[in-house]
Structures are given as C-alpha cells and as structure tokens.
Image 1 (cartoon, rainbow, N blue to C red):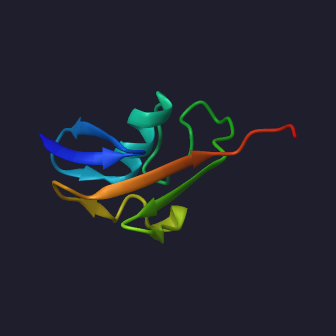
Image 2 (cartoon, rainbow, N blue to C red):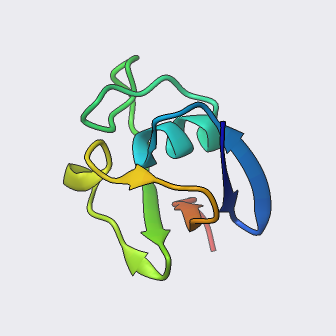
Amino acid sequence: MTTVRINDRDVDLPEPATVVDAVAHTTGRELTAAGVPADGGRLGVAVALEGEVVPRSRWAATELVAGHQLEIVTAVQGG
C-alpha cells in the first residue's frame, strides 16, 4: 500500500498508485486510464500534486509515492 495525503486526510492506495487511482478513490467512481468515468458521465474534477496542477492527460502517467500530497476538488453548480 502507498499512503498519500488527499485533501488533508491520509489515504492508503494499492501499489503502484497513480493520480487516476486517487481520483477514483476520492470520487467513488470507476475511471478509465484516460481519467474519465467508465459510465460515460462527467467528472468535473481538478487535481494538484504537491501544489502543482496535474492535467488530466497526465493522470495515468503520474505515479504516487508515500507521502505525496494531493488536493482533489470537484466543480459544483450554484452560488
């Protein structure tokens, strides 16, 4: 297991873990390697790793190591 910090909480992810795995864990949704929901729906998520935004095109290629810190935010409608 790899322990990373997501939104100020320690989370254990199976090794090897990528940003896709972290987003899937956080959202509770199954994602493809491209970082899109397997059900074809929308995701509306942005990810920062160690303070740097990770483009969705790099989620599957960005491996996580123990101690990495991620911020995962979701877009919500409303004011």
